[in-house]
Image 1 (cartoon, rainbow, N blue to C red):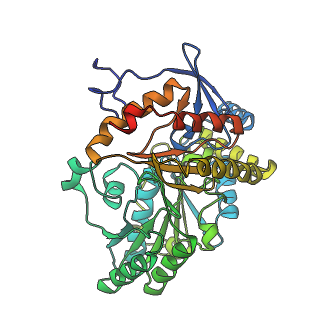
Image 2 (cartoon, helix red, strand yellow; image 1 turned 135 degrees about the vertical axis):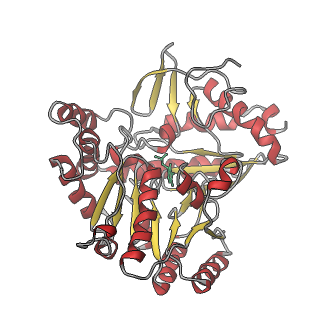
Amino acid sequence: MARTTIWHPFTQHGLEPLETEIMRAKGAWLETTDNRRILDAISSWWVVTHGHRHPAIVEAIKTQADRLDQVIFAGFTHPSADALAYKLVSIAPPGLAHVFFSDSGSTSVEVALKMALGYWRGIGEPRTRIAALEHGYHGDTIGTMSAGSRGLFNATYEPLLFDVVHIPFPVAGREQATLDALDAACRDAPLAALVVEPLIAGAGGMKIYSAATLAEMKRICAHHGALLIADEVMTGWGRTGTLFACEQAGITPDIMCLAKGITGGSLPLAATLASPAVYDAHFSEDRTRTLFHSSSFTANAICCAAALANIGIWEEESVLDRIAAVSEMQLSQIAALADDARFANPRCLGTIGAIDLRVPDGGYLAAAGPALRAHFLNNGVLLRPLGNTIYVMPPYCVTADDLARAYGAIREIPAEITSA
Ligand SMILES: *Cc1c(COP(=O)(O)O)cnc(C)c1O
């Protein structure tokens, strides 16, 4: 393998072939420089919701770029940020009233953790203990890796990570163990916050849990005064069947993190929404109670305009109907694999379909990953399994034929990969 000038994310350049170059994209499809078409069956790493280059978003970006590109956001604001903050508060679970902008999912979670500690310090009862769900993923910065599950991806950095209380994942049928562990953690010592991905652990392997369990976790946190941070970076913007996953549990978290689909997946932007209590604990004439966080591109005007256009699409088009149709297609495609002995644990949540490939052992996975990706790409489909979990997470404009193509490629996984 050749050394490359560009150092790609999550890429072992010593093992993986040269990258595919994409020249254009439209809807659910990517086009390579050499004119091959590839179905974007993972929404370009979970960010693209309506489809690539939705005309309303493209138009909003152009218009905003012609007016205001970027302005410092301390001491200044601009109309797109103002409008976006009001819209976000109006569509978020009721009770979230304040919006802090940043530029990636990781920073939105970092900000959430800082808000939580700032809250406890602000009300004069400092708490710093953070709990997180097993199999969680919250980003790749040091703070968010600390909150995430530990393993291959962060072993090198382990000495820099802070301790968190890991609560067992609420596996179907064993939810009570999770709730008991959370309750025990709260009784052991005061907890500042519990951070969870609502309803589904994404990067942790598309592991799904019930809305009732999420509601119970919220209840236990509230009972002990611990804040609940909902990391909706992946689940937000319709992924799980509702605009936000928390809606399905009927809960309002104390802090909610949004990124990925907030601009329809067109530009980087993130928002951390907070309850009045969290904001008020920082609101003071005392400078030491300031939320000391900023990114250079906080609330970038072009990104905010793209996010406003995304919400406009939600208001003007029947996005939830489209999502329901994609969910139906996913259910039938996944059901068709249920009897296939090569697979296990077929599951769906909203627009996400996932299944596990039965494999001999973990070490084998590292070899199967690149082989699977190459197989899918050769069939014109962008899929990127998580270990032995194959998942399909398309943009909402995907057609039944498109999905049939993705699942066809899954069905045709060569025997040498499954039995290696
Ligand atoms: C992707 C993801 C993040 C990190 O977002 P980035 O924009 O990649 O920093 C955080 N939390 C969850 C649940 C995610 O899926």
